[in-house]
Amino acid sequence: MNAMHNGSHLARRVITALVSALLLASLGHASGPKTPPATHAGWLRECGSCHVAYPPRLLPAASWGAIMDRLGDHFGTDASIDEPAAAAIRAFLQANAGRDRETRGAPVLQITKTRWFLHEHDQVSQAAWRSPQVASPANCGACHRGAANGRFDEHDVRVPGN
Amino acid sequence: MSIRIARALAPIVLLASASAVFAATPADIARTYGDEARQASPQFKGFSPERGKAFFQSTHGGDWSCSSCHTANPLAPGRHAKTGKTIAPLAPAADAERFTSLAQAEKWFRRNCNDVLSRACTPQEKGDVLAYLLELR
View (cartoon, one colour):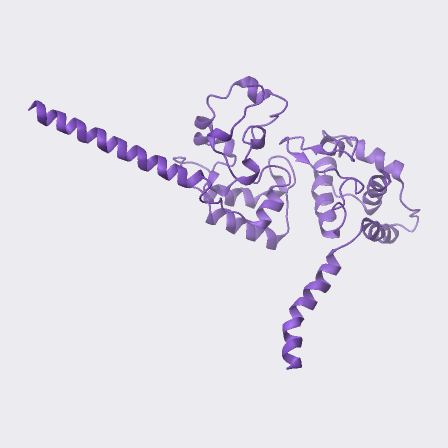
């Protein structure tokens, strides 16, 4: 009985280890240097002129659609672009979009408002958010030194003042 | 054979002439705005760097001016007022890529005039700003 108990305990630990290894491997696959992040010249040029060209995987397809629908009033600024370029960028964003992690309701329009983002950044202090080098949570590159190249690995983060 | 060569070369020739249409110098763009300003008003008397500078630094009754992002010194890099992203200097003397495409210049005037003035800029205003930026060394 005891041996059986130990056996099932061992099996559970092996399974947990395997699942963790798989999870780590898949995470490494998503953000590691082996798979270059999806890229597109028009997206880099147009989206990257006022902010980091946010990787399409950070929002679901419905969110990108809603954002591209109202570029004339893009969070308080006019970010309109001509139609052929806009259509190509929309297609790129939607083809490489992340999965929809929010449960219901209207599409989230800001990466910084997703539950995923809030969870990932819950250890960042208010002082760091307010530091002049950061200025805005949209300023990924202030801490994520690889942001301009689509890299957001945790080991590449330097929070100003820390 | 020669037809085949001509066919092969046609896309290259087309591409070269198309890029010639889009490539411009800041002086070309200033000339275009001059033509438009003359058409808009027979009283047009040329562009003024001083007027351009005042226009560039004014908030025009709103929250932002051109300087909010491009700073009061367009020879230096700017910083986006909302996102904090570094913006390359706007003056052609500091960044040779500035004002080398009419389409680009028009895109940014359209967006930024809308942000700062809540309307489109006139050819006179755009030409004044460009005259100011071209004067900076």
